[in-house]
Length: 324
Image (cartoon, rainbow, N blue to C red; front, side, top):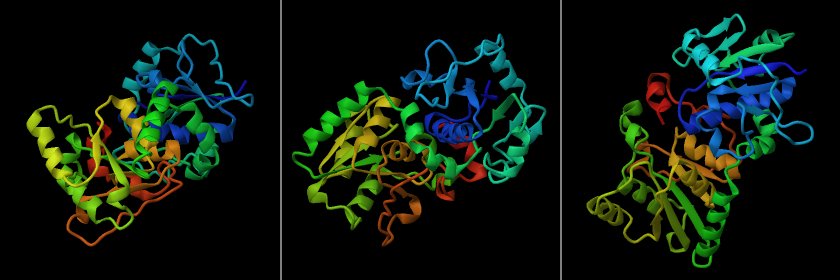
C-alpha cells in the first residue's frame, strides 16, 4: 500500500489550518502517500468532500475519490490526541516525526519539496507530520484544482452566495469583499495589520482601481457590531459608499468573501487569502503603513497559499495569529 502520513498539526484556526493542508496535500500527491489528518478534525465538518466516519483523508485517488484509511487500531482521536500532546517541541526529525515547531523553524529548511524531507520520507511506510510551516508552493500551484475540490465548502453555501451576487450585479458591475479583521489583530504584531472601519473606507475611497459609483462593498468582520451604536458608527465610516454588512459564521463568511469579484483584507490574514485562492479571485492586502499615504491597492491574481513571504507572519507574532 501507499506510505501513510499522519498529520497531527492542529495549530491556528481555519485560515492557517487550510494554508498548511494545501502544502501537505500537494506533497502527498507528489510522493504517492495517503494522509490521515487528525489535525483537521474540528473543521472536517465544513468540507463535504472529506470522508464521514473516519479521519480526514486525502489526496484524491486517480479516480477522483477520497482514499480509505487502513484499518489500524491507533488511527483514532484518543491515541493521536495523546501523541499530539506528547510531541517534541523542537524543529527537526524525531524518530518518525517531521516536526516544524512554530517558534524556531525556518520554512525553507523544513520544506516538503526539499532534499531533507525527501531523504526522511524515503522508504518509510509511516511518518508523522507536525507543524504548519511545511511548504511546497510550486506543488500547490500544480495541484491547485484538486486542493480546491477537496476543501470546497457546501454547495448550499456557495449557491446562496451565487444567487446574492447575481442580484447585486444587476445594479453594481463589481462587488468587493472587505475582510475587516479585528479582535486579535488589534494587538498582534503591534497592531500593524489592524484597521478601523473608517480606515478601511478611506483606503477604498482613494484606491484608483476601484470605481465607487459601480461597486458594492460587501463587509465581513469577526467583530459583530451588535449594538445599534456600533452599527451606526459603521454606517458613518462607509457613508457615501454602497455597502452591505454580512454577519455569518466562519464557513458562511468564507464562502461570501470568495464569491466577490475582488477581495481586500489584512496583509497577513490567511483567512481572506484562502478565500481568494479557493475561488481564484484577485486579492489586495492592507496594513497600517498604508494609512494616509498615496498608496494604491495592489490586487494580485493567481495566489498560492504561502507562495511568498507576504503571507508569513513574523515569528514574534505567530502565537497571536495562531488564534485566528
